[in-house]
Length: 111
Image (cartoon, rainbow, N blue to C red; front, top):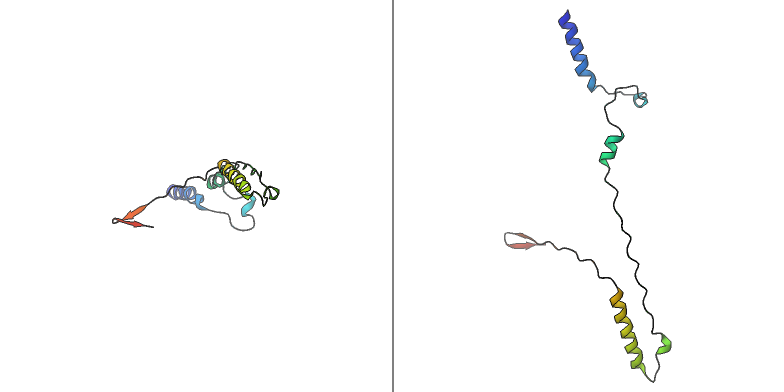
């Protein structure tokens, strides 16, 4: 008789960990707790991305206008416009350099 009680008690201890509540009262907290909760949800979520604001571009010089172009001396307006464009090129930040990875298989470059 004691062996039967011991076997039932051991079976209850081992078997009760696999019982999950089912039905309308499953979410009410009346069933066994399995350690799943907010801790598991926090681990599954990726970390927040780090965002860095882009630098504000400098406005163009805009020193040459339509009133600067005259029929008597159009080359002066061309030179002014070229100087303005060169100055604007210097203020534009350079584009970031991307890395290109080449893959070779049997001595042939794969694309």
